[in-house]
View 1: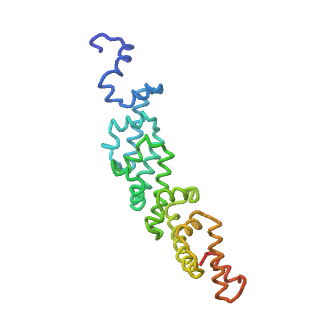
View 2 (view 1 turned 45 degrees about the vertical axis):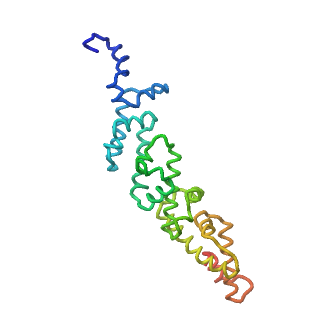
View 3 (view 1 turned 90 degrees about the vertical axis):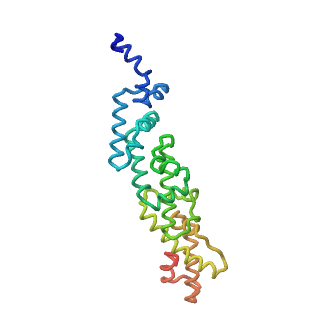
Length: 247
């Protein structure tokens, strides 16, 4: 263009239409079409931010940080900060935890197509969805670690427990499910004495789901059992202490 004596203004106008420019800035065209164009300097700055994050977590920059992949993040307006949050969810809370990783692949089998990290970095999936999927997988994995069969807590049910567990750490969620399993085993035995049924989900709902109604029912069942053994019609101090934990 210089040898053809193009002016600086004309070069700036013509350059984005060249194949070399499109290869170097693959995400730029989509931004311009959407009326949200950025400068080349900002584009390159975002690329560097993404690559820095990938290297910090020891991820493959050749694949996850390819020029075309970086362009996908940019055209979907994924900020370097959001990108780091996605990488942290993928690498730290999922990929580095075998239990959670297994649950994630079970709940969301589409991840096997490109790997869980690549799936969670896909900017077409909203951040809210990604966070929910990761949390759901952590709850599902914690249920198995806590002693429940895999089919007991599926993706749909695990999703209903997100509000109850809040920001609780994975290890603490595992502990909650272990308590729920203890409650389930004890309450099932007590329910059989009364010729009734008791499910694992009732125990999970009482402990992990923080369902006061279910917890109270368990306490009352334990109190009745304590009363039968004591021969008393009412509650004693000992039976109250026993009923408090449902065993």
